[in-house]
Length: 354
Image (cartoon, rainbow, N blue to C red; front, side, top):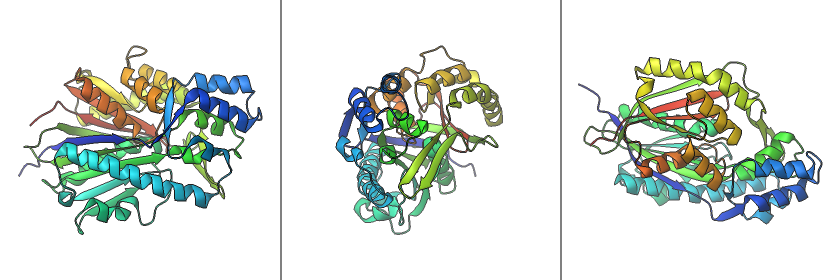
């Protein structure tokens, strides 16, 4: 018996209520760091050169100006993450025409806070999931988590055809902003990262309307742990972010792309558009070089970065949502994201069916 295709049948995004203008954020950072890491003129140039206009945050801007301990940061994470999780998940289920009670498995991707019980367990009653729903919380994938989470959901759907799988990614990167962390990585992170959530529903069902997930892949480069991640101390998370990331992408990603498409049996030339996680302006430039498109081609990535900043795992779904809404690329799409490990993740989506 042939296993049905796994199809993406629902997608939604969600943002927290507080919006921060990038110029205002630069002024606040200048006051916070007082020239101790970068000269104020250089710090403001960093903020201005990100390509970001606005970001959304879990707390109002003034909340971040006071030193917060790990317990207070994680309490804020739990409160805000639960609301964003609900918003994104309910939106994706509505888009898919699926009841929460009919979901067979739930994947939760988040690396910016700790929840035990995990978020989907805390929200089980509010959502109306079945008592027998399978729960898979995933921590530590960072910016790669959205595509990895979608791939995991697709694999779960294959083993239980006909039962929808919900994947929700929630990241509250702003809660790691720390006035006590006088590292260059911390300052740069304060210029880049925002908060958001996204959810997707997939099902193995040939009668479902949606894009098939034709292939997925993940590649990890050995000895690359220092490129991206968290370090943890009594105050909470501190960012690890290498300035060499764009050069690493340009040098290392092209052969991996060739390998991924060859392994999947997919002609790379058949891809109408790459849908990339926009880590930042320099990362986007490196990605365009690596995937072989003209500079500036990743227009929806730049638009999402401008409107929301880098939200880590959910960001690629904000891009996918815009690509699908534009309707200019009805054929094959290739999603990609890069994250701690250092890891590249991919998902290849076919033309819409059903």
